[in-house]
Image 1 (cartoon, helix red, strand yellow):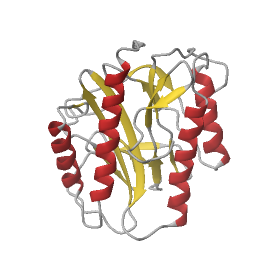
Image 2: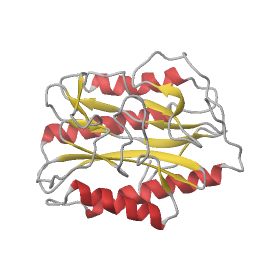
Image 3: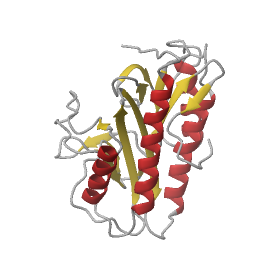
Length: 260
C-alpha cells in the first residue's frame, strides 16, 4: 500500500516526527559508558508513554523476525546494524551504538535512526563509517521532491556509499510510512535513476542508508532479530522520515536545534 497524506494530516506527521527526534536526542544525551541497553529500552518506553504515543516495535511480528519484537527501541552495537534487540549489555568506551526508533502518535508513525560512539574513544574508521551514512542520507533527501522517482533517491544514496568504499546490501532499505510503520514503496540503498514510483506531495518516506565495513553479508543472532555483519566488522545506520511537499522534501525527524 502507498499512502498519500492530505495537507490537513501533515501536522500530525510532523508531531510524530518531532517526538521520535526528541526521544532519540534525549537517549543519546543520557547514554554513557556503563549504560545498559535494557536501560535505554526502559527510557524509550517511558518517554513514549508520557507523550501519549504507541510503540511501533513492541508488538511487531513480521515474517523476517522471530516476533513479537517485545521491546521499544532497536539497540545495535558495533557489528550489529539492524533490528538490534535490547539485552543485558553495559556499553563500553568506543562502542558504536545505533538507536532506531519508530513511534505512532495520533494515528501516524515516524521512524528514525542515529549512530554514535559511546565515551571518549573516537576510532577513525568508525567516525568515517558514521559520516558516510549521514552524507548518504542527506544525498537521498536532496534528491527527493515531487516528480522525482524512487530510483533517483536510491542512486543518490548508493553513489555516496560506493564512493566511500562500502559494499551495499540490498535486502533491507527505506520504505513508505504513514498510518503504519512499513509501507510501499521500498527504497533500496542503491539503484538506477529515473526508475520506480514517481513521488507525490503527501508521501512519507523513511530513508535509511546503512553499511558494514568490508562486507555486504548479514547474519542473524540467536534472538531471531538482531542482524550483524557476517565478518564481525563495524556497522552504522542513519535514518530520517521525510514528507514530500510541493517544494521538495521536509525532514520530519530532525532533532531540535539540529541542521538538515
